[in-house]
Length: 146
Image (cartoon, rainbow, N blue to C red; front, top):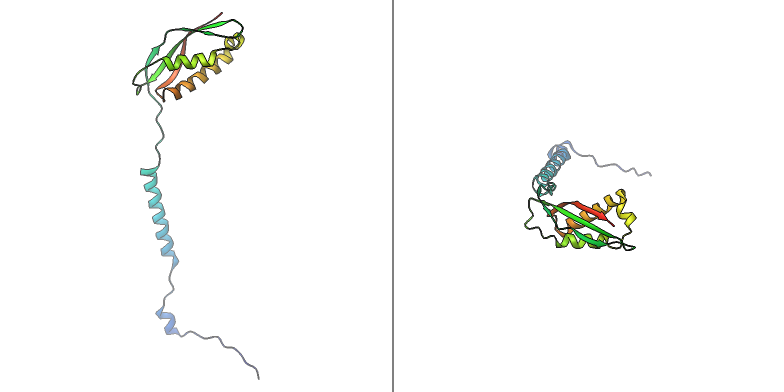
């Protein structure tokens, strides 16, 4: 005796009563919600890029002498390019940073234009940090070695 298994057959009435749910509508809704959330983030929550600082007044500082290596010295004058948001121009931080940077350097390094440019850039970076972005540049108004 052989037993054959028969698959249950669905009646046409049962198929008509439960229509197939389409996932297409759900996908469209999810994509729409994600697009809306992305648009809101872009418009309101995304960090705004910082505007470059606007140049304000230039403050010249009194020249100072700095001891270099091998009994040489440097007489240097600085001018600070402030931003328009700068409140006051106290030059003591700038002079201190210049003394710390140039002290003890060999005169050959200070007189080399390439090294002088690198030193100026390093001093400018230090001053931007010290003055909390109220200084945007530094100029050498006097630069004499002996």
